[in-house]
Image 1 (cartoon, rainbow, N blue to C red):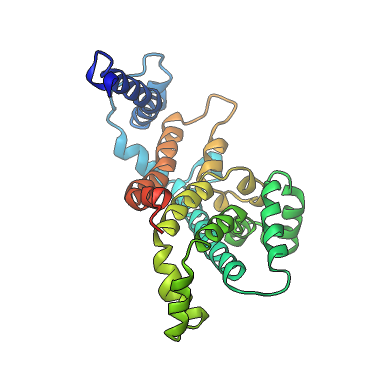
Image 2: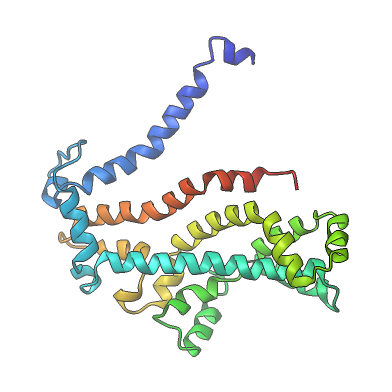
Length: 281
């Protein structure tokens, strides 16, 4: 309190402004580049003010086929990324929620063995199991498909662990009251657990959507055709080694790649923060 009212009161604001400039300036430069032409960007005197090709560049990226992407427009890659991120986020939430529900509220032989087996998968990141996962995906005929993009990444030990810890905090009195009210397992799940878990589900959705959206290695491996790849992989494909790189389109793609995850975070910010810090349950 002393530092806030004294001569160092401006220090937190200075640090925040410096951090904002450090993070925001590259994004602003990318946006400015997406409104210019490639010769203007490569001229050596790139303006720091937006140019006059904003609509033209973004329409070209979204609707016209890119030669570096075998004629596929960026709008198609945007759709692929959106389908992949949504499938991964929703799939992880459903599987994790149900697996944690079974582990906490049902008594069956090997229950804890199942939990620890799920927990041990935390030690095996995708990069370690990439070869057998790709082999299984190829044997199932899921190469170049939405199923191949999302299904191998759809299970989450971390989310299962988080839901288990939350379910363990549900009071026994609430469970007993539901039982006396005649609630079966499905009704207890639908009428009690889902409402109680709404903020946790929202926070988890934001994290998992951003995780799925930013995937690079797995989409690079599991897709062979440009029409099924994702926007993140497409940006890398646009960066050619010669002088033909359309930098204005690359920067437009970079801005487009940031919009959906940023929109999800902004739209669900209140639920996201509440889900992370809520300690009332």
